[in-house]
Length: 144
Image (cartoon, rainbow, N blue to C red; front, side, top):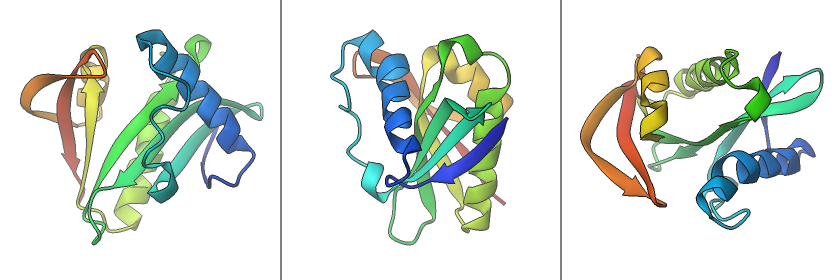
């Protein structure tokens, strides 16, 4: 499996969009492409298996000094879930964040994914909240 960073001009971006629609948006009744408001300013990561896109994640800067960023729109194709692809995507994304000099990566974790992020050393902060009709936790990880 290969993880790589792509731009919105890469042909793989359209496959990323489709995966996000299928795994994240449609199941909770959101319109296709309805969560792309930060795509143009973000870094995009994809996981490929046999040249097929099977996972993706977006890292959106939260400040102009690139101190903080938000991991968002992480999706793994259903038949590839629980096979280590998400872990590998996050590890590569965090390595990139460190190379870019970021100090913190945060995310809004769906409550059913909180344990996944905790295993990767993310910590919960604040109270559980609802976003797009789904319960979430604020989570973050400090980068050394």
